[in-house]
Image 1 (cartoon, helix red, strand yellow):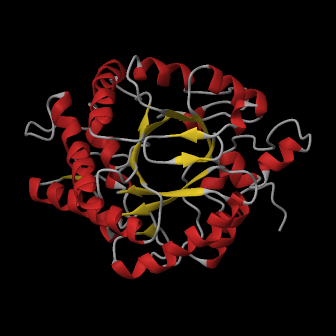
Image 2 (tube, rainbow, N blue to C red):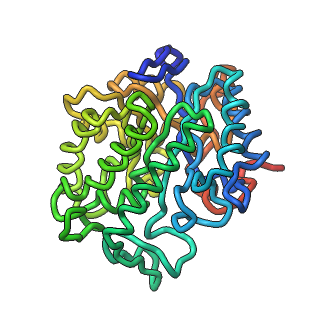
Length: 344
């Protein structure tokens, strides 16, 4: 099967086409470091045929975390525990990159949330508009966090520009109403991401792998957002981005009967740009995986099914028909047990 074929990026080679997409684990230590439970989780994933683990999300500053117990690469002391992920997965031939994020209008604590403009994602909990000096500070936070990821031994980083977090808010016209250089045009909305990627390449080396995760659609002003993104994809290529992982703004509302949610939109946005593409969403069995790869996607990415069954690929190889995950989304709220189908 193609899913078990080697994937060669420009600066990174993966043993197969299976990616564990980053997700909040609900297991992190309160000081932002990786917990022993998380290390066990990563090792279990690696031992069950996962080619690439996108670890995290790792938040780039204390002000940008999404909740207490979030993983961070905001301080140097967090490097040592992050390095243990590498030592736990490497014996299985698995590569690991760190997803870097700032929660923006989703951040905790809720009394000082920031965004490109005033944004109210939750009633009576608005985020205030960032000043240019704050934007520049966040850019440096991402660059510094990427360097810590490199020092930890991570094989690269992924910049999280999806799911209504801060960088997604900058890229999304319905959120970003700025009239300065960080808004107004697609170049302006893209500028913060561009400067982060350039800064990482300058500090970590031009050959240090940088992935980017984006939504393939937007809940509002989707036509403008899609038009913008089609122009950004060639920019990612020019900036030396290793691959683009596509998710979507509406994954949490998709039905169990839906499969391979974002393949069509991802390939449409990629167009003729020669850049590798990873797609996450609604991939539940080998038939789904092969269909995604046959559509021209380079790697398939899985999140919620691997929360429910970290050994899913082994189970499928042994004859299980499909993932037991029903996309109920309770894994976002049930805490350390993660999946309601888990009995212990």
